[in-house]
Amino acid sequence: MPRFLIKDTAKHIGEKVRICGWVDTRRAHGKILFIDLRDISGIMQVVFVPSNKEVYDLAQTLRPEWVVEIKGQIVKRPENMVNDKIETGMVELSVDSLKVLSQSETLPFPIDGDGYDIGEESRMKYRYLDLRRQRMKDNIIMRHKTIKFFRDFLDKEGFVEIETPMLTKSTPEGSRDFVVPSRLQPGKFFALPQSPQQYKQLLMVAGMEKYFQVARCMRDEDSRGDRQYEHTQLDIEMSFVEREDILELVERMLIKMIEVVYPNKKIQETPFPRIPYAEAMKKYKSDKPDLRNDKNDPNLLAFCWIVDFPFFEKTDDGGWTFVHNPFSAQKEEFIQNLLDGKDIEKIIANQYDIVLNGWELASGGIRSHDPKVLEKVFEIMGYKKDEIQKQFGHMLSALGFGAPPHGGIAPGIDRLVSLLQNEPNIREVIAFPKTGDGRDFMMDAPSEISKKQLDELHIKTDSLKNTKEKVKPATQKKSTKTKK
Image (tube, rainbow, N blue to C red; front, side, top):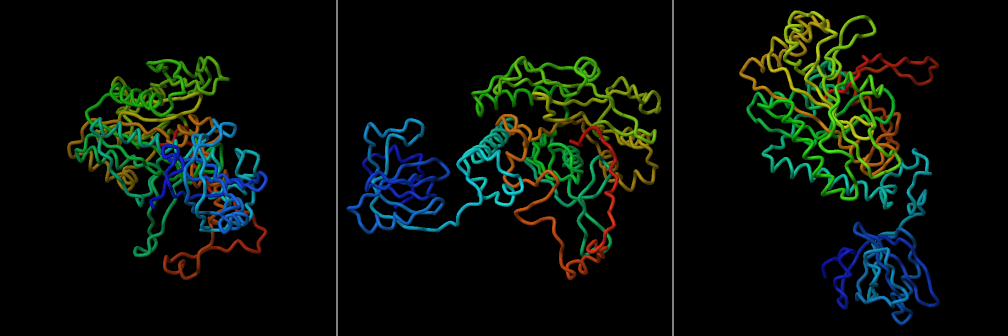
């Protein structure tokens, strides 16, 4: 007998079915025993009666979160027992047979509430239990539906989904890299990608023209704000486009996604307002303004574009660094300023952000496809020619082989879904996140590795055990924007 999902059982009144899941609750009314059985699709009331003695006696032993298989007949509930709050509230299962598939110890915390009152350390340690609660299950399912919509939408628009490497080269482009030692090349290291930035541009050089990827990005950031070591972004790049082409595509995609996946949400204004960076800073004192007319309405979405960012900003030591991304292009009217290295603070980049309810949702830009211009950007930032070649020679070389004009954007999936789900932070919409300070209590990571592994990697470590010396964290270059 095939297994039925609980949500489908109401369509099969009078039929014999087999359902499997977790015992959600157990209760008795006189001699009749009821359990609510839960699976991924919903909850169903199951009825055990004393006349079926063997099954009834076994049912008496059931406890919450035991995993069971039940066979029986779908019948209509008596009118006074109809539960219109659940999809299966009109029916119940009259049991023929019961099989216990797995027993459960007492859970370390309840899962019938929203879980906000439970300590983060406990929730992270037992994340596989935390995910059983309905709120968390809904978050993960809605994340799936959102990503699926984007994939289907971009496929219809002629984009090709392409995976890019997870082991790449460490380059100074923003946040601190996670590095991976090479066993076969002693003393050398890979880096985990902060984003697929360089690869997606190389795909444009390769002639792919329309690329996207649901990309995993890793950044070894200090504990600050609502950040994670790992995050997911919808990475998009297009050839032969101007800024307007990208903004139109993304705006249309987001509007349609809200309409299809979140029909209960209301977008405050379309087309999305476009605000120059200088105006946003003057009027709102922020490049992430919250434009909602009613900030108490959880279903109101106020999107806006922030455009015309400055290309460079001063560093603490008086030099120059990029605001968004070193691979961005300047607006055309500033090309001579950039090439001459004059009035650097006045150079405006062809970059843009999309903001939702006061949060940066995506960052992007038209790229520099001229190797001479890109090289000049790094010179302004203080890199010498030999350093530029060592760090970015592969990009300069590629752009010299007929690179098309191109640009892109990378909406953050975690941030978008957390806002749409009205969650307080992105950890609530990530299946297995790290804590705010970057630890994984469930897997006990990060952790030490064996001496054998260290020897294979030709790595020696300074033991910090039994010492009172405090180790200062490595300095990290300040960057106003993350690279996308």
